[in-house]
Length: 146
Image 1 (cartoon, rainbow, N blue to C red):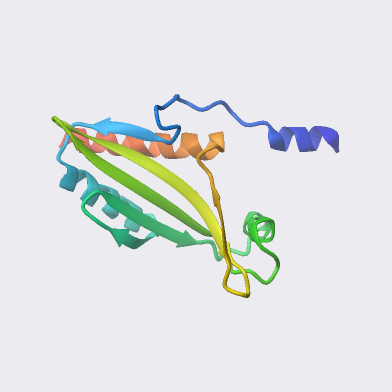
Image 2: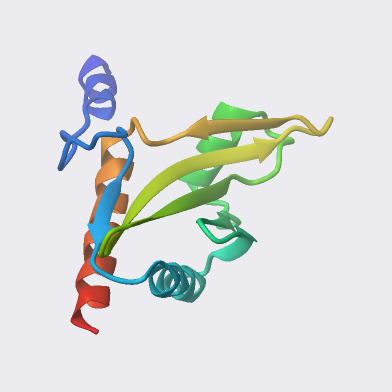
């Protein structure tokens, strides 16, 4: 049992160290083109646009799979009566000379029966960090090909 718990606690190292501590990347493209591409790819991936401004984009996806992972997340953040976990990704777009810097903040939340929302930010989880850093690299590669 102890080895199982220690295996769950161990995480891969972060693929890169960033200034912000969040997944981030610089893309040689126009800010509007970058933001539009990120919106398109997230919607294609089943996320819904929650909020959009000139310099940010927030997308979310509710995990209604009833999987063990979804149930565990729901109970860890709330209780058995809480809403299913909602994964939220916020992208920040900063125009720099000749490029756009994109930062990503990832969280999961659930709402308790009384209305209280419990949220856990996932940027410190190396596996989640690496998955979103990889996403940024893929998006950069596609955008810079155009």
